[in-house]
Image (tube, rainbow, N blue to C red; front, side):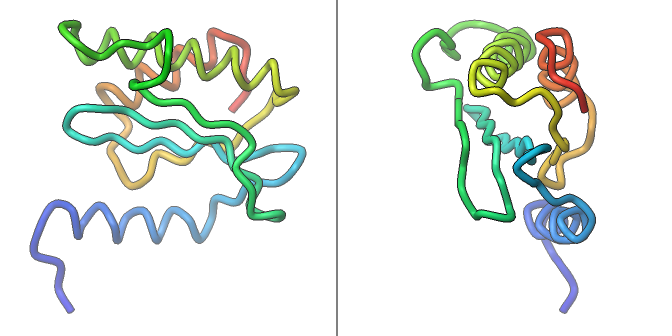
Length: 119
């Protein structure tokens, strides 16, 4: 069946990506989801099927209201990097969720790298 919407195309890209990307206990998957209004980041161990840490723009310390979406993505990336380091996570596998690696996704990833995460 042929996809007809942007969301369906993204879903297909994500399925293809997930065939290659897998999180482990030593190197969890950093999964990113972008909605029109918010950004979500999770650190997932796929072997144990457990979420190790999660953060989004609705969490304390990261406000999405009134600011540029790129600025919010940068702040979320920094917070996600700090949270991961606090949980003992140093290396991650980046899962962009089928979204193109530009704009908010790229800024978030770069900010997480600056905070100390290794991709």
